[in-house]
Image (cartoon, rainbow, N blue to C red):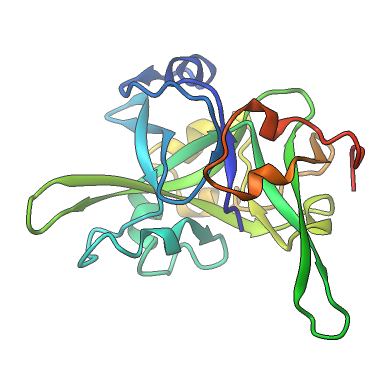
Length: 235
């Protein structure tokens, strides 16, 4: 899964990277994004690529309320095309969620009870410093009492590659730059979309230990993404 990530770049900077127009005033500086936080997403509407704001945790259009959003932060690649919560968005509302890194935890268990006794956080990012491009979905939910519209999103996950697999068995689907157009375009064939939902190669990625401060969603700041030197780089 992907339950926490870093999105420190502003909407303006992301628009330059993804060749889009910013339509939301998002300053960035988010190093500890958690479910239900507001995030920047790249979408394509009427042939124009935009960077807009979404709340992380998809609320399907048919939901009675938005209370279950935190449970739908991820969509499994294996079932996204058939799941009632995600299939409409997969057909019509795909997005890219940029991130400088995502976090996973190495969990150590008590051999007797099986309970987790320690969870050490690690960051996974690109070696070249460029942002990751998560394959995502978005939806519009209308509040039946107020008619207010809520724009939400979810990250598609797949099985982990050999690097991330040392920490967790799932990882976000990472899109290469040459796949951005096809993922965002309204008319892309389902077979082509399915062909993008695979684990990324491990070679372009780096993984390193970070401060346990990232465990608390109230903590923020660039120091959360800094390597924790006393644990060393790597696993």
